[in-house]
Amino acid sequence: MTTALDRIRNFSIIAHIDHGKSTLADRLIQRTGGLTDREMSEQVLDNMDIEKERGITIKAQTVRLNYTAKDGITYELSLMDTPGHVDFAYEVSRSLAACEGALLVVDAAQGVEAQTLANVYQSIEHDHEIVPVINKIDLPAAEVDKVKKEIEDIIGLPAEDAVLTSAKSGIGIDEVLEAIVTRIPPPKGDRDAPLKAMLVDSWYDPYLGVVILIRVVEGILRKGQQIKFMATGTQHLVDRVGCMRPKIEQLTELAAGEIGFITAQIKEVAQTAVGDTITDVRRPALEALPGFKTVQPVVFCGLFPVDANDFEKLRESLYKLRLNDASFSFEAESSAALGFGFRCGFLGLLHLEIIQERLTREYDLDLITTAPSVVYKIRLAHDRGEIELHNPADMPDPMQIAHIEEPWIEAVIYVPDEYLGSLLKLCQDRRGIQKNLTYVGGRAQITYELPLNEVVFDFYDRLKSISRGYASFDYHQIGYREGDLVKMSIMVNAEPVDALSMIVHRGTAEARGRGMCERLKDLIPRHLFKIPVQAAIGGKVIARETIAAMRKDVTAKCYGGDISRKKKLLDKQKEGKKRMREYGSVSIPQEAFIAALRMGDDS
Image 1 (spheres, rainbow, N blue to C red):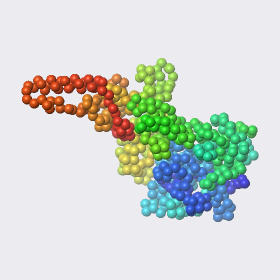
Image 2 (image 1 turned 180 degrees about the vertical axis):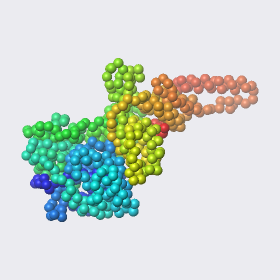
Image 3 (image 1 turned 45 degrees about the horizontal axis):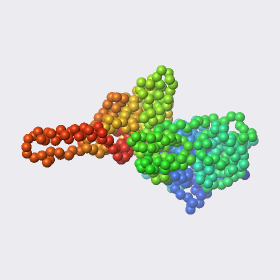
Image 4 (image 1 turned 120 degrees about the vertical axis):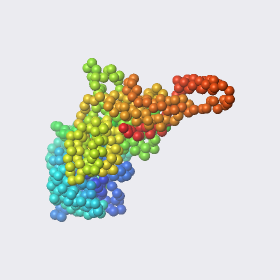
């Protein structure tokens, strides 16, 4: 039976990582009887182990709850648990577009953080009614009044009637539910109009195929209906309609204003683009819903198996992962040093880390990851067009290049005052341009424009170590700019090692090259001959280290007699070493690669 529009409330929870978003969702499910105490577990909506361990949400989840309010009316609440991290910003925007309101969860001890801000602004863009919820009020370090002032000063939301809760202890949960019912508006939508539904998310189920999470905006979607995806143009027959409570419940239809899921015998997630509009084949909508865009990978790196025999296993594992996550791409590549592997594209660094960890855990693979790089746009000389460069090894000859453009981001960083100096230096070292610096309480809010190339190495780790974990960081891309960029090759015994080549800014190339050479000198074992390790731009060597040869004392058996006997033996050895350096090959152990690439950039 379809619920009346004025009894429905669709809302999401937005918060910074670790501010208690998933715990609050758990309490709401428990309080409305979605699951019994026996069925409950920590972070119910986070299905992956990696989500539970890191305290992050990677995939959006939805749950439909029934709540009888103080006025005696039973409301249908649809909660969207959205990812909080910047890498998944597009998925978050589609999840927010499916709702009419949001709970803004802020930690009473930590206050407003960078990602809270980014997601709140997205929520405001969708004209949401935002209900501030101050969580963890029972902590000894909680400063409720200070946090209320931060919400008003930074975000500009009135916070005098913010709901005070402790999701872990179950304090204030009824007040949150009442605020949802009274303050968040019901959805709008004409149930007699042609079908128009938004594809919010999709995931692969081994039994059901691709499960599609949708929000019906206009019309009614029924089981057995022939539907069409407007962006991809494909048609499918709906064989299952339902909602999550959080267990699967099958329904006969989903009407305008409702959130639920459908299955339509689709085999690959890649066929279902997030943000696409679903309509009826017989009576189609005239135009698609606004806001759809194709997600493009931002960060690229090579994944190679440590054991070359695992290449086929890696290929299968990537295909299986792609069933569930269509936002990363991969294609086969080979490297002289690392053998066969794949060049993969990701939405950002956290996305890269998650995919890598899932491959290691779920598919038991040992992997070498090459240094991450971003997508560069290369304008060719003599007006021969523009190409995109994903892999530094594919860079054309410098004589054919007019100029190179690199992606830039605008970053907002929150940091306690005492760490401000070191943080400003870090951003300056990474070619940052400071745009703004303001103070909120005892913390500084800094806005910087930075090249993405400088951020993908280890910017986040350095930021956390400089601020002892107190700084928070959020960014969005602002386009491409021309830069003085060059390809830096690393040569071992005069042979270029393609897996270690990278694109760097000319100003930082020398420091980066020196750091890499020093590291490789310590990592590559000594051979019977001297090994030069060089960093070069084109034909010009910018840094060099020499790995000393292992010496055998050939004069040990030479005692007494003339010095010329010793000289003769040493000259003979020198000739042998010279010949060996010409014909001998240097074996670089896998561990050296792993260590050199993991340590990224220490400049």
